[in-house]
Image (tube, rainbow, N blue to C red; front, side, top):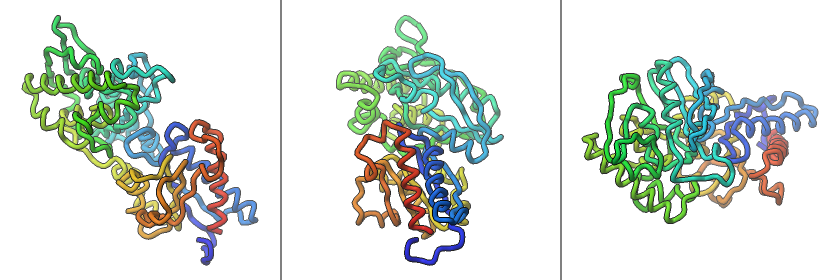
Length: 386
């Protein structure tokens, strides 16, 4: 760092999460690296900063991309989007583990601006992507929950995996928030593709399915649900749990109360019904991407996300990374920071740079501006390293 004797070549591990709504983790890492390298070149010390890029994810948007970065193969499949229209989705597979994410199958980002429909949105596309992944014969499937547009308790996903939901007239229901309250019978068929496959839910959401901290109340508004729609979704999910119990499906009431059941509009609940094990999304992907080994050969770790705040301290990706960095200097970059400087030490942060310090414009809605500012920040970081 500044004021110390720097090694001949400073090795920087650039390991950010996405800047949600603006840049992917890979784009954040690339912009910072470009700034670091250009500063070294301008100082007449080309090659003085070696950048290793490790775009990260925590189970939300970008989880498949992060797995591909680590060496997984990308596979594409057409699935039903959150509104039922076909969308092209990707999964990642390395021969043993498949990674399937909510964000690119039934995520909020797939809904056109101004077209949110919280009652009609479905998680069926996620189930179709899981079905496709199972066709590759994996030993495990990582279910990356985050960024969903639906609040259907995973009814849509379950319908793609062999569950049959019918209304009072016997018509089959594919799954949506509105359809939950119309279920009158449930048939669970044995799906052979799931036999012997380990299901892992990667999520850092701890909300239950129902109640004041449940999926409709906490996450419904960001999916376009007003008070009336939240009430419909809450009642529908209660009915769903009751119908599952009446159909002799084991322990739906207990699973609805499980921390994380409310993640991704209740997809966490449906995954638990399927026997999935829930793990920390941040820690799982740090392990998957071999962060512990990669950080051993670096002098400084540069991480970041869109906003650094109290939630970051509670265990989001930068905090999980900081716990593993082994005393190495950690620099954080964010769109904004609500964390007071005196609290940086709680995450072992040496410095926090924010895009908000470099512009008065709203960079969150301008990817080009965000990338340019990150390059400037990369130059400033380099000035403190060389």
